[in-house]
Length: 463
Image (cartoon, rainbow, N blue to C red):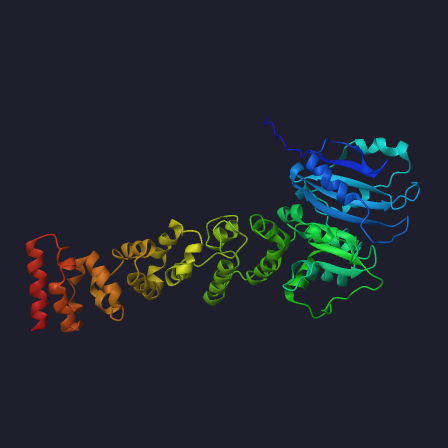
């Protein structure tokens, strides 16, 4: 009997801590020992946001990465009117390790694990870790329980990702909480870890101007509405909203998680990646569309290491690619026609193997690409010309290279025996004279007998 072992995912450990008043705002309880730098940051962020007003039953959220602890801190803050000093607060902080944050299909589940202390005797529970079972099967939004308004989600998306994003929304307290958690859950792991937000600030809040929040809610009496009607939005915005109400594991989310994994400037790349997803849903892309995509990737991600996985998949270097399979001849043409293609990964050997496979049906197309290669002086072009030598038919060589003088010259230099052709009679006499005097071609003949044979052949044709 074969022993079958299954890998069981471990529980998710969430650390927690509590900040509040005890002869000053301070850390009151914690389930782990935090670096001093982390404690200093959390001390500031856990205090009451300046110039805001809320009731005892209301609360606001702050989320920020804590790099020194390699963790993400999610904070919920309530007023503490039972304290003798005005303006005191309780802030419960959940601390999720960077390595675990990808394990939450729906980050809003964390909202259920925050709690306001009832009394000082209640502090002990904040000194214990919280353990959650694996959540892989969980849906981001429970079926038939959509807890956010689509217009609010649109406004969050536009405020974070659009070209005119402000990172700020004016609204009453609590209106956008669910929408923010939904959009945060849609992000790939690296972006989740770096995304920072606060759901309660004021126009006088100096903290939000010194800490680079990606999104803040500035509390106002009236909500500022989105500039776009939900029915007339851009396609990339529409698909993002639809994705949020479908089960976890959508094609879009898989695409974002794969290609967002190593892009820089995550929030600024979200729109680009979503549009790229839409552009690449065709199984077979036309050459024009494919070239536009390649140019767009180079323009958006000019650094070689920025979006490396995306670039490698685009040029067909990974079997796990979520992109349409690139046509090897189109890809070769792009590289040889555009010097900026050097910003993409080098082509794999499979591209050259495709030359032989496609030669019978696409020889004219390949020869046109080779003419471009012959004009330049690149390793890629030299490799292509080298592969063409055994494929060229001697009897049709001069006909097929009639309007490709650079290719003809390069191939004759590589293989002077291509001169042994009846098609020489179709070659202009000035060109024939050139073959007699061109040492690179004649030097390629391996003996005197062959040299005399080709010279006599050409001279007879000249007569």
